[in-house]
Each structure stands twice: as C-alpha cells, then as structure tokens.
Image (tube, rainbow, N blue to C red; front, top):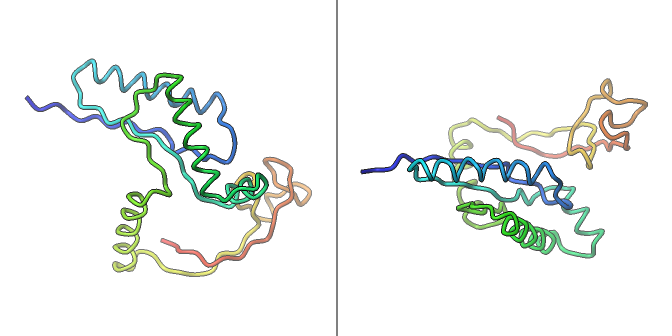
Length: 162
C-alpha cells in the first residue's frame, strides 16, 4: 500500500538575531501536525530552515566581527540545538546558502529569464534595513520608518522584476 505524502513547511527563518517565542511556536505547531499525520499513516516531509541572505545579516555579522557565512553557520548550529531541545521531528533543514538550494534557484531563474518572464531594471526607494521594507514618502512618519521609527535610506539598485 502506498502512503499519501504530506508536506509541512515552516517559514525559512531569518537568522539576523536570536529567535523569539513566535519562532518556536510556529515550529512546534508544525511538529505537532507532522507527528499527527505520521500516526495517521502519512509519509510526512516536515521542512524547516534558514533564509541566510540580506543586508541585515551582513550588518549583524560585521558588528560581531564575523563574515556573513560564519554568522549564519553559527545561527544554523544554534537553531538545530534549539530544535533538538524542543524535540522537533523535522525531516530536512534547508539553508539558502547550501549548493543544493542555489542549484534549484538557478534553474528556475534561468527558465523564467529564457521565457521572458523576468527582466532587469533599476529600483529606487526608501528602505528601512531593520524592517527590511521599502516605503513611499507618503508612508513615512516625520521622515522615518512608520513601523520602527528609525531612519530610512534612499536605495537605488539593479534588480530583477516579474
């Protein structure tokens, strides 16, 4: 008899700092569902991991005197230790700096590019690094980020668009 496959994923967490109770809550909730589905006879694939790219990670690593890769390696180790303490039954821990992840992204990107689904252009906007968000002038409160009240930076960068 073939088992039905059941996929569960957490967000791929952003390791710019220590995790909080919401991170554990989401992962525990996924673990509860994974265990339940396994008990019901499903072939479960419970996936979790880290999104290891971005300006915030680069800044945090620099402030700690580390390379971004060393910082995310440390965070991955700490995350796996935390999941072990919580007895999380994940099947795969995905890291966006892993070659297997990069290969899949490259294939998808190349396909979209060949089909004309994406194009390169410049993007300019007001960016809040702590919030990792762009805002319009209208959205700012007294010239600052409406979410965290910090300074925003005018950013212009070459980007790909759908």
